Image (cartoon, rainbow, N blue to C red; front, top):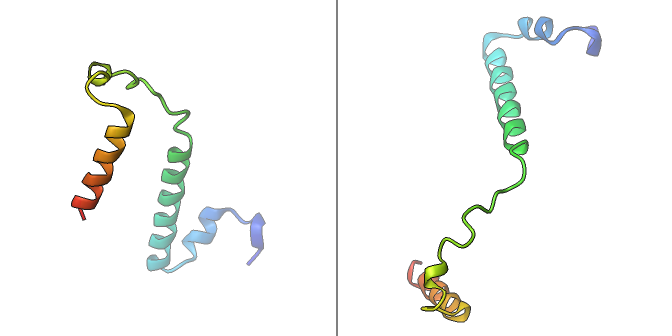
Length: 74
């Protein structure tokens, strides 16, 4: 083997079919991982969508409700 100077395509062609499939799956994984990282900054366009409920509940009440929902959901 000539090491890193050999094109990856040539190296993969020398592998048995089952290993070629593993390489293919790994490349797909790397491509998906790259796409997930490059999504950019999160958008907060949902901010203020529940403002009509602002006068009905306090943040403390919501915190208590969430705690109860979590305990009840277990």
